[in-house]
Length: 348
Image (cartoon, rainbow, N blue to C red; front, side, top):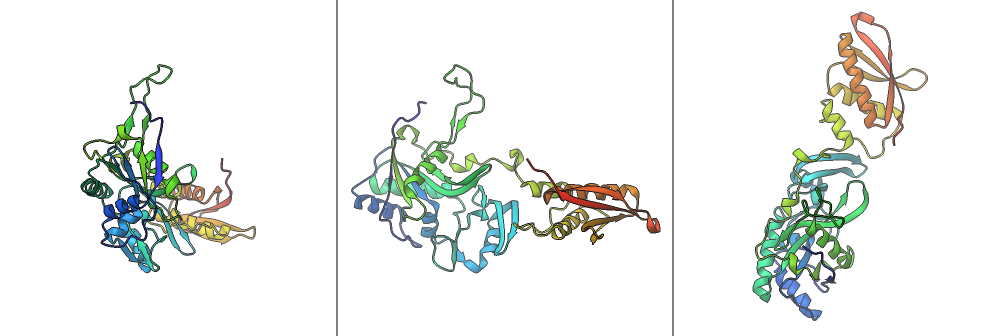
């Protein structure tokens, strides 16, 4: 299918504050009419998940935020402790992997947080049906949300829910401009629509939706597979855990409390190393000061156990941006002991 060569993206202004129980489709249509616009067949409406959630009344008290995030989380990818609480990246109940399960405290009533709709595709389908009934036009709907991306600074909007719009343009098997067959290219059309719409919606301008014209070939008669079809299952995700969490899981210490954002002193970092190393298997590991600074003293019942503990310590040091040198330290009372001296690890 040829790429679109012309696209019009218009922010829908004058929507105002959306409240629980509001007819969101009617609110959007009336806002369009107020700016002397309307929808026609083949248009796409990109609507912020925030107003969808507000219309559904998906709020919770701010003081319950951490409990709400936990309830909205399927699995934790990475977490860090901050001065104000736990910051986490999780697979959300709504589907995508994102910070805080999408629980949001911005642009909401003071003292509350907003939850994502549990089934954003269903919300998109319902909104599409309501828009058709109000206008007679067959339009596509993309419910958008905002997330960061691995390897990139900043955030961008993506498709949380989709109805009536192609979500993927699978080009695998087709020939590129040089005549070579493509083997991996599959454009995330719905995400590109969401990102384009965000250029006119903004985050602070009170413009929660956009009308996109020129994507008629991407609007389909049926509702389509929805945005959930874009989710990569954890079983095929190369990055299903953060680097610290992956190491901790590998050595059997996944249950240890999340590390802080600010690492702290060397002694504090070594104390966390000791917790992780001993949570992953037998042996004892204590932080001591030998006069030259803090070191780790390891002890175990036999040489094999000591070696295993030393390897867990070396792995745990890596999660604190440290590297270590193991030194044997005698065999008192039949036990085996060693010291581990740590130093900053070079990182690429």
